[in-house]
Amino acid sequence: MAVNENPGILQYTRIFKSPYFYGSRRHGVQKYSVYNHHYHPRHYRDPVEEYWQLLEGVTLWDVGGAERQVEITGPDAFEFTNMLTPRDLNKCAVGQCKYAFITNAEGGIINDPVLLRLDENHFWLSLADSDVLLWAQGLAYNSGMNVQIREPDVGPMQVQGPKSKEVMTDLFGEGILDVPYYYMEHHELDGMELVISRTGYSGELGYELYLKNAGRDGLKLWDRVMQAGEPYGLSPIGPCHIRRIEGGILALGCDMWYDTNPYEVGYGYKWMVELEQEQNFVGREALKKVSEEGVSRKLVGVEIGGANLGSYNDGSMIDYFPVLADGERIGKVTSGCYSPRLRKNIGFAMVPVEYGEIGTELTVERPEETVPAVVADRVFFKPEHAEQTLSATSSSKGA
Image 1 (cartoon, one colour):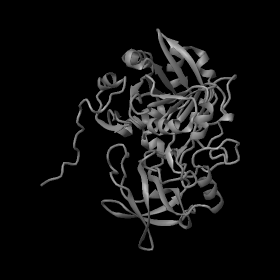
Image 2 (tube, one colour):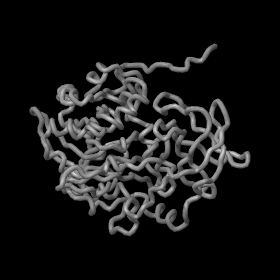
Image 3 (spheres, rainbow, N blue to C red):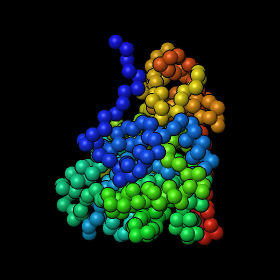
Protein backbone atom coordinates (compact mmCIF):
# COMPACT_ATOMS: atom_id res chain seq x y z
CA MET A 1 0.00 0.00 0.00
CA ALA A 2 1.35 3.43 -0.94
CA VAL A 3 2.38 5.76 1.88
CA ASN A 4 0.55 9.07 2.05
CA GLU A 5 3.48 11.46 2.37
CA ASN A 6 1.36 14.40 3.48
CA PRO A 7 -1.51 13.31 5.75
CA GLY A 8 -3.67 16.20 6.95
CA ILE A 9 -4.44 17.31 10.46
CA LEU A 10 -7.87 16.64 11.96
CA GLN A 11 -9.68 19.82 12.91
CA TYR A 12 -11.96 19.24 15.86
CA THR A 13 -12.71 20.45 19.37
CA ARG A 14 -10.03 18.52 21.26
CA ILE A 15 -7.22 20.72 19.91
CA PHE A 16 -7.48 24.28 21.22
CA LYS A 17 -7.54 27.38 19.04
CA SER A 18 -5.54 30.58 19.16
CA PRO A 19 -7.54 33.79 19.64
CA TYR A 20 -6.31 34.62 16.10
CA PHE A 21 -7.26 31.21 14.63
CA TYR A 22 -10.12 32.43 12.47
CA GLY A 23 -8.21 35.55 11.44
CA SER A 24 -5.18 33.62 10.27
CA ARG A 25 -7.33 31.10 8.36
CA ARG A 26 -8.49 33.89 6.04
CA HIS A 27 -4.94 34.09 4.66
CA GLY A 28 -4.69 30.54 3.44
CA VAL A 29 -2.92 28.50 6.10
CA GLN A 30 -1.30 25.56 4.25
CA LYS A 31 -0.19 23.47 7.19
CA TYR A 32 -0.82 23.19 10.93
CA SER A 33 1.11 21.48 13.66
CA VAL A 34 0.05 21.15 17.30
CA TYR A 35 1.96 23.21 19.87
CA ASN A 36 1.04 23.53 23.52
CA HIS A 37 -2.22 21.69 22.70
CA HIS A 38 -3.21 24.36 20.11
CA TYR A 39 -3.32 24.50 16.33
CA HIS A 40 -0.18 26.26 15.17
CA PRO A 41 -0.08 27.65 11.60
CA ARG A 42 3.28 26.66 10.05
CA HIS A 43 3.13 28.39 6.69
CA TYR A 44 0.77 30.12 4.28
CA ARG A 45 2.82 29.88 1.09
CA ASP A 46 6.30 28.76 0.08
CA PRO A 47 8.40 28.90 3.31
CA VAL A 48 11.31 30.36 1.32
CA GLU A 49 9.08 33.23 0.18
CA GLU A 50 8.12 33.77 3.82
CA TYR A 51 11.83 33.79 4.75
CA TRP A 52 12.56 36.64 2.32
CA GLN A 53 9.45 38.47 3.52
CA LEU A 54 10.86 38.33 7.06
CA LEU A 55 14.33 39.52 5.99
CA GLU A 56 13.18 42.35 3.74
CA GLY A 57 9.68 43.40 4.80
CA VAL A 58 7.33 42.87 7.72
CA THR A 59 5.45 39.79 8.88
CA LEU A 60 2.68 38.82 11.29
CA TRP A 61 2.90 35.52 13.15
CA ASP A 62 0.00 33.99 15.08
CA VAL A 63 1.60 32.64 18.24
CA GLY A 64 -1.56 33.02 20.31
CA GLY A 65 -1.81 29.26 20.59
CA ALA A 66 1.88 28.43 20.63
CA GLU A 67 3.26 30.80 23.24
CA ARG A 68 0.91 30.06 26.11
CA GLN A 69 1.44 32.16 29.20
CA VAL A 70 1.94 30.93 32.74
CA GLU A 71 1.16 33.77 35.14
CA ILE A 72 2.68 33.78 38.63
CA THR A 73 1.42 36.24 41.22
CA GLY A 74 1.17 36.51 45.00
CA PRO A 75 3.40 37.63 47.89
CA ASP A 76 6.00 34.93 47.17
CA ALA A 77 5.89 35.19 43.36
CA PHE A 78 9.44 36.54 43.03
CA GLU A 79 10.98 33.85 45.21
CA PHE A 80 8.96 31.09 43.54
CA THR A 81 9.73 32.21 39.98
CA ASN A 82 13.42 32.51 40.78
CA MET A 83 13.27 28.93 42.05
CA LEU A 84 12.14 27.76 38.60
CA THR A 85 15.10 29.12 36.66
CA PRO A 86 18.93 29.18 36.91
CA ARG A 87 18.87 32.93 36.10
CA ASP A 88 19.14 35.38 39.00
CA LEU A 89 15.94 37.40 38.74
CA ASN A 90 17.34 40.07 41.07
CA LYS A 91 18.90 41.27 37.81
CA CYS A 92 15.50 41.46 36.08
CA ALA A 93 13.82 44.82 36.69
CA VAL A 94 10.09 45.43 36.50
CA GLY A 95 9.41 46.05 32.80
CA GLN A 96 12.28 43.84 31.67
CA CYS A 97 12.25 40.47 29.89
CA LYS A 98 14.72 37.60 30.10
CA TYR A 99 15.35 34.51 28.03
CA ALA A 100 15.47 31.77 30.66
CA PHE A 101 15.58 28.02 31.09
CA ILE A 102 13.17 26.16 33.36
CA THR A 103 15.13 23.18 34.67
CA ASN A 104 14.28 19.93 36.43
CA ALA A 105 16.14 18.34 39.36
CA GLU A 106 18.66 16.75 36.97
CA GLY A 107 19.35 20.11 35.31
CA GLY A 108 17.42 19.10 32.18
CA ILE A 109 15.66 21.78 30.18
CA ILE A 110 11.89 21.64 30.71
CA ASN A 111 11.25 24.83 28.77
CA ASP A 112 13.00 27.98 27.50
CA PRO A 113 10.47 30.80 27.80
CA VAL A 114 10.81 34.54 27.52
CA LEU A 115 10.14 35.68 31.08
CA LEU A 116 8.33 39.01 31.50
CA ARG A 117 8.40 40.82 34.84
CA LEU A 118 5.24 42.93 34.97
CA ASP A 119 5.54 43.95 38.63
CA GLU A 120 7.55 43.10 41.73
CA ASN A 121 5.53 39.92 42.24
CA HIS A 122 3.93 39.44 38.84
CA PHE A 123 5.51 37.32 36.09
CA TRP A 124 4.53 35.78 32.75
CA LEU A 125 6.41 32.84 31.29
CA SER A 126 5.90 32.90 27.51
CA LEU A 127 6.37 29.24 26.77
CA ALA A 128 7.87 26.88 24.28
CA ASP A 129 6.08 23.57 23.85
CA SER A 130 5.80 21.73 27.19
CA ASP A 131 3.45 21.60 30.17
CA VAL A 132 5.05 24.17 32.48
CA LEU A 133 1.68 25.16 33.95
CA LEU A 134 1.36 21.71 35.54
CA TRP A 135 5.04 21.67 36.58
CA ALA A 136 4.73 25.07 38.29
CA GLN A 137 1.44 24.21 39.96
CA GLY A 138 2.91 20.96 41.27
CA LEU A 139 5.96 22.70 42.70
CA ALA A 140 3.82 25.42 44.25
CA TYR A 141 1.52 22.87 45.92
CA ASN A 142 4.48 21.37 47.76
CA SER A 143 6.52 24.55 48.30
CA GLY A 144 4.48 26.18 51.05
CA MET A 145 4.80 29.50 49.22
CA ASN A 146 1.91 31.92 48.81
CA VAL A 147 1.56 32.11 45.02
CA GLN A 148 -1.22 31.88 42.46
CA ILE A 149 -0.42 30.17 39.16
CA ARG A 150 -2.77 30.17 36.18
CA GLU A 151 -2.99 30.52 32.43
CA PRO A 152 -4.35 34.04 31.78
CA ASP A 153 -6.49 35.07 28.82
CA VAL A 154 -3.49 36.53 26.97
CA GLY A 155 -2.71 35.93 23.30
CA PRO A 156 0.62 37.01 21.80
CA MET A 157 1.31 37.77 18.16
CA GLN A 158 4.65 38.67 16.61
CA VAL A 159 5.30 41.58 14.22
CA GLN A 160 8.80 40.94 12.85
CA GLY A 161 11.04 42.22 10.09
CA PRO A 162 12.89 45.47 9.22
CA LYS A 163 9.65 47.32 8.44
CA SER A 164 8.08 46.32 11.76
CA LYS A 165 9.12 49.67 13.21
CA GLU A 166 6.94 51.52 10.67
CA VAL A 167 3.91 49.37 11.43
CA MET A 168 4.40 49.69 15.18
CA THR A 169 4.94 53.45 14.96
CA ASP A 170 1.70 53.86 13.03
CA LEU A 171 -0.12 51.83 15.66
CA PHE A 172 1.46 53.14 18.85
CA GLY A 173 3.39 56.31 18.01
CA GLU A 174 7.08 57.19 17.87
CA GLY A 175 7.54 56.34 21.54
CA ILE A 176 7.44 52.62 20.76
CA LEU A 177 10.91 52.99 19.25
CA ASP A 178 12.28 53.85 22.70
CA VAL A 179 11.54 50.36 24.04
CA PRO A 180 14.98 48.72 24.35
CA TYR A 181 15.70 45.17 23.30
CA TYR A 182 14.17 42.76 25.84
CA TYR A 183 12.06 45.38 27.59
CA MET A 184 8.30 45.93 27.49
CA GLU A 185 5.57 48.54 27.91
CA HIS A 186 1.84 48.62 28.57
CA HIS A 187 -0.32 50.10 25.79
CA GLU A 188 -3.96 50.63 24.86
CA LEU A 189 -5.21 50.44 21.28
CA ASP A 190 -8.86 51.12 20.34
CA GLY A 191 -9.99 49.94 23.77
CA MET A 192 -7.74 46.85 23.74
CA GLU A 193 -5.16 46.30 26.52
CA LEU A 194 -1.69 45.15 25.47
CA VAL A 195 1.77 44.46 26.79
CA ILE A 196 4.32 45.04 24.02
CA SER A 197 7.83 43.64 24.24
CA ARG A 198 10.85 44.17 22.01
CA THR A 199 11.36 40.42 21.57
CA GLY A 200 10.70 37.72 19.00
CA TYR A 201 11.71 34.34 17.62
CA SER A 202 13.17 35.49 14.34
CA GLY A 203 16.61 37.05 14.83
CA GLU A 204 15.22 40.13 13.07
CA LEU A 205 13.95 43.44 14.40
CA GLY A 206 10.53 42.87 15.90
CA TYR A 207 7.93 43.07 18.62
CA GLU A 208 5.56 40.76 20.44
CA LEU A 209 2.06 42.04 21.18
CA TYR A 210 0.56 40.35 24.24
CA LEU A 211 -3.18 40.96 24.05
CA LYS A 212 -5.20 40.84 27.26
CA ASN A 213 -8.83 39.65 27.04
CA ALA A 214 -7.66 37.80 23.95
CA GLY A 215 -10.70 35.57 23.80
CA ARG A 216 -12.81 38.68 23.29
CA ASP A 217 -10.49 40.96 21.28
CA GLY A 218 -8.36 38.55 19.24
CA LEU A 219 -9.96 39.08 15.84
CA LYS A 220 -10.22 42.82 16.46
CA LEU A 221 -6.46 43.09 17.01
CA TRP A 222 -5.66 40.78 14.09
CA ASP A 223 -7.67 42.99 11.72
CA ARG A 224 -6.24 46.21 13.19
CA VAL A 225 -2.63 45.07 12.72
CA MET A 226 -3.30 43.78 9.21
CA GLN A 227 -4.84 47.15 8.33
CA ALA A 228 -1.88 49.09 9.75
CA GLY A 229 0.57 46.86 7.92
CA GLU A 230 -1.08 47.07 4.52
CA PRO A 231 0.97 50.10 3.29
CA TYR A 232 4.16 48.20 4.17
CA GLY A 233 3.19 44.88 2.60
CA LEU A 234 2.68 43.02 5.89
CA SER A 235 1.59 39.41 5.48
CA PRO A 236 1.17 36.46 7.86
CA ILE A 237 3.87 33.79 7.99
CA GLY A 238 4.63 30.79 10.18
CA PRO A 239 7.76 30.28 12.28
CA CYS A 240 10.77 30.81 10.01
CA HIS A 241 13.07 27.92 10.82
CA ILE A 242 15.60 28.91 8.16
CA ARG A 243 16.22 32.21 9.98
CA ARG A 244 16.12 30.42 13.32
CA ILE A 245 18.82 27.98 12.32
CA GLU A 246 20.91 30.72 10.69
CA GLY A 247 20.78 32.63 13.99
CA GLY A 248 21.69 29.66 16.20
CA ILE A 249 18.26 29.84 17.87
CA LEU A 250 17.22 26.60 19.54
CA ALA A 251 13.87 24.81 19.39
CA LEU A 252 12.64 22.85 22.40
CA GLY A 253 11.75 19.32 21.37
CA CYS A 254 14.15 19.43 18.41
CA ASP A 255 17.51 20.62 19.73
CA MET A 256 16.97 20.12 23.47
CA TRP A 257 14.65 18.32 25.83
CA TYR A 258 14.30 17.18 29.42
CA ASP A 259 17.46 15.07 29.12
CA THR A 260 19.58 17.95 27.80
CA ASN A 261 21.25 20.50 30.06
CA PRO A 262 22.22 24.13 29.31
CA TYR A 263 25.94 23.32 29.08
CA GLU A 264 25.33 20.78 26.34
CA VAL A 265 23.51 23.28 24.14
CA GLY A 266 26.07 26.06 24.55
CA TYR A 267 24.12 28.13 27.07
CA GLY A 268 26.17 27.47 30.18
CA TYR A 269 27.08 31.14 30.38
CA LYS A 270 27.45 32.58 33.88
CA TRP A 271 24.61 34.99 33.15
CA MET A 272 22.35 32.10 32.09
CA VAL A 273 23.22 29.53 34.77
CA GLU A 274 23.98 31.60 37.87
CA LEU A 275 25.30 29.06 40.34
CA GLU A 276 26.67 31.67 42.75
CA GLN A 277 23.36 33.46 43.41
CA GLU A 278 21.96 33.41 46.94
CA GLN A 279 18.65 31.78 46.13
CA ASN A 280 18.36 28.11 45.40
CA PHE A 281 16.72 26.87 42.20
CA VAL A 282 15.57 23.51 40.88
CA GLY A 283 18.52 21.67 39.35
CA ARG A 284 21.23 23.74 41.01
CA GLU A 285 23.26 20.86 42.46
CA ALA A 286 23.06 18.86 39.24
CA LEU A 287 24.16 21.82 37.13
CA LYS A 288 26.96 22.65 39.54
CA LYS A 289 28.27 19.11 39.10
CA VAL A 290 28.07 19.40 35.30
CA SER A 291 29.88 22.74 35.48
CA GLU A 292 32.70 21.19 37.49
CA GLU A 293 33.01 17.92 35.55
CA GLY A 294 32.22 19.18 32.05
CA VAL A 295 29.96 17.62 29.43
CA SER A 296 30.48 14.56 27.25
CA ARG A 297 28.46 15.86 24.30
CA LYS A 298 27.52 19.24 22.87
CA LEU A 299 25.36 20.86 20.23
CA VAL A 300 27.40 22.25 17.36
CA GLY A 301 26.76 23.90 14.02
CA VAL A 302 27.24 21.75 10.93
CA GLU A 303 27.46 22.45 7.24
CA ILE A 304 25.90 19.51 5.45
CA GLY A 305 26.65 18.43 1.91
CA GLY A 306 24.33 17.09 -0.75
CA ALA A 307 21.22 18.45 -2.41
CA ASN A 308 19.05 21.30 -1.10
CA LEU A 309 17.87 20.26 2.35
CA GLY A 310 14.59 22.19 2.24
CA SER A 311 13.15 24.70 4.68
CA TYR A 312 12.61 22.39 7.70
CA ASN A 313 9.15 23.91 7.99
CA ASP A 314 8.05 21.95 4.91
CA GLY A 315 8.24 18.50 6.48
CA SER A 316 11.63 17.79 4.91
CA MET A 317 13.11 16.48 8.16
CA ILE A 318 10.71 14.14 9.93
CA ASP A 319 13.55 12.22 11.66
CA TYR A 320 16.93 13.13 13.12
CA PHE A 321 19.81 12.48 10.70
CA PRO A 322 22.48 10.08 12.08
CA VAL A 323 25.98 11.56 12.33
CA LEU A 324 28.91 9.21 11.73
CA ALA A 325 32.67 9.32 12.24
CA ASP A 326 34.95 6.57 10.95
CA GLY A 327 31.86 4.62 10.02
CA GLU A 328 30.41 4.61 13.55
CA ARG A 329 27.27 6.45 14.59
CA ILE A 330 28.28 9.14 17.10
CA GLY A 331 25.39 11.62 17.18
CA LYS A 332 22.47 13.18 15.32
CA VAL A 333 21.51 16.28 13.37
CA THR A 334 18.70 17.89 15.37
CA SER A 335 17.69 20.70 12.96
CA GLY A 336 18.71 21.33 9.37
CA CYS A 337 17.75 23.40 6.34
CA TYR A 338 19.05 25.08 3.20
CA SER A 339 19.98 28.73 3.75
CA PRO A 340 19.15 30.73 0.61
CA ARG A 341 21.48 33.61 1.42
CA LEU A 342 24.38 31.44 2.59
CA ARG A 343 23.67 29.06 -0.31
CA LYS A 344 24.42 25.91 1.65
CA ASN A 345 22.83 23.39 3.96
CA ILE A 346 23.24 24.24 7.63
CA GLY A 347 22.07 22.75 10.89
CA PHE A 348 22.79 21.71 14.46
CA ALA A 349 24.15 18.35 15.60
CA MET A 350 24.60 16.78 19.03
CA VAL A 351 27.97 15.04 19.03
CA PRO A 352 30.59 13.87 21.57
CA VAL A 353 32.81 16.78 22.65
CA GLU A 354 35.85 15.23 20.98
CA TYR A 355 34.10 15.70 17.63
CA GLY A 356 32.92 19.24 18.39
CA GLU A 357 35.86 21.34 17.23
CA ILE A 358 35.16 23.69 14.33
CA GLY A 359 36.44 22.15 11.12
CA THR A 360 35.97 18.52 12.23
CA GLU A 361 34.89 16.41 9.27
CA LEU A 362 31.91 14.10 9.77
CA THR A 363 29.39 12.15 7.72
CA VAL A 364 25.61 12.58 7.80
CA GLU A 365 23.07 9.99 6.72
CA ARG A 366 20.24 11.82 5.01
CA PRO A 367 17.21 9.76 3.93
CA GLU A 368 18.20 9.90 0.28
CA GLU A 369 22.00 9.96 0.51
CA THR A 370 25.04 9.86 2.78
CA VAL A 371 26.95 13.14 2.59
CA PRO A 372 30.02 14.83 4.08
CA ALA A 373 29.57 17.44 6.84
CA VAL A 374 31.87 19.77 8.74
CA VAL A 375 31.50 21.30 12.21
CA ALA A 376 30.94 25.08 12.15
CA ASP A 377 30.01 27.93 14.48
CA ARG A 378 26.42 27.29 15.57
CA VAL A 379 25.51 30.95 14.96
CA PHE A 380 25.70 31.19 11.18
CA PHE A 381 24.26 34.72 11.02
CA LYS A 382 24.31 36.99 14.06
CA PRO A 383 21.07 38.70 15.24
CA GLU A 384 22.34 42.30 15.08
CA HIS A 385 19.12 43.36 13.37
CA ALA A 386 17.08 42.23 16.35
CA GLU A 387 19.32 44.01 18.84
CA GLN A 388 19.75 47.33 17.01
CA THR A 389 19.09 50.66 18.75
CA LEU A 390 16.13 52.46 17.21
CA SER A 391 16.27 55.88 18.87
CA ALA A 392 18.74 58.17 20.60
CA THR A 393 17.10 57.51 23.95
CA SER A 394 17.10 53.73 23.82
CA SER A 395 19.94 51.26 24.30
CA SER A 396 20.56 47.60 23.69
CA LYS A 397 20.88 45.80 27.02
CA GLY A 398 20.80 42.18 25.93
CA ALA A 399 18.52 39.30 26.73
